[in-house]
Image 1 (tube, rainbow, N blue to C red):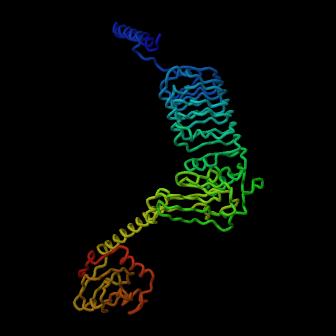
Image 2 (cartoon, rainbow, N blue to C red):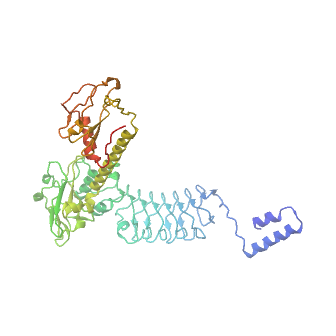
Image 3 (tube, rainbow, N blue to C red):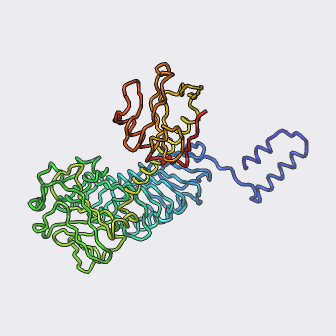
Length: 528
């Protein structure tokens, strides 16, 4: 009997026939199928909220009823050997994580994962998979992370990753792959934003260098502990990665061949290398014209037949596929030729070649190409960095100007000093705090305080008790000759002394030039 009905019928008859009638109605509705069944935790499993763990239960067969509330299902450390299409009897739209690691799975039927279309994390590691068949992951368009390391995979058929549009991280380490899975990047419908690929501890003897130069600009590919053949193309790739401080290589540098301390690699025409430091250079060409860019560090006349790759802003080209009719062509001597240059060709170009040398941090194997005049380069990737620097400089200047104006206003309106004049006496109590800087010294002599050509300077105040009450007014500074006509700083300066204090000169310059405190803004009147 249904548990709800059993519970209701087993209650004490409180209320007489009304309870019996209600129980009978519930039983009738249940028989008609109107009441849903209650999800229960599967046998041999542990359920906690929306997590179901059946790990280590020695399960060898599926399916079983999966509660509809489950978002994470752990079936690791069991004895499963296959995954059929009906491994769960009904579709689960809430399941996002499926862990099948540490089993003996050697076969996965096509469309086996269509019953869980919203999986984000799938763990098939440490099983006995040997081949990834076409459409094996069909339906997993939302999957972001796939773990298949620790299997025995020797082959990946075309279309195996055709539905994994959202895949970002793929772990294929510890298998028996002999060929690089180019289908991940070449086949339509495959991953569009793969940022992590682990192919370490496989049996790869060669890798597509040109493809790796293209795809590693967006993500990391780990290739350590593979029996890679150390040829000139691979040496060029590893040298370029070392110069770029490519993390998958730097972190496992000792597990790669062709290291700089290795003596087993080939000598790739080292006699054709310059020993001078490699400096970044800029080449400019008008739109529609042709441009030749030599590879930094190579002596063109001795590099015939050498593998040279050029990483351009849009693609990667190499010297082995010479095509004189192409827009971007690498000549046999390693020189890049741009025919009919376009504005979008502007950017940074990297020359990848086996130079057989250790690069200093300040050396550069890249060059800058500008199509058009330098003023139009700001619309291209070449000037993104300089544009950011100009913005930072402008912002800093504006901020300092605003702060200076605020300090000016605070000094003018919040200063505790007030000048008082008594009949027959000069100014008292102001010391050397402020001086009216006039373009004409005669304005001071006549005490005519006009606003034309006047500026404000702030000087260190004098001690109040050091001012002679009977002394005349301190003359102003004449900016035309930058002299201290009466600037008395602790009694160390006298009339006519040249203004040489760098702090005061810098302050005067800032007030006059940086913040543009014009006479129209600050017009002086006689202080009370």
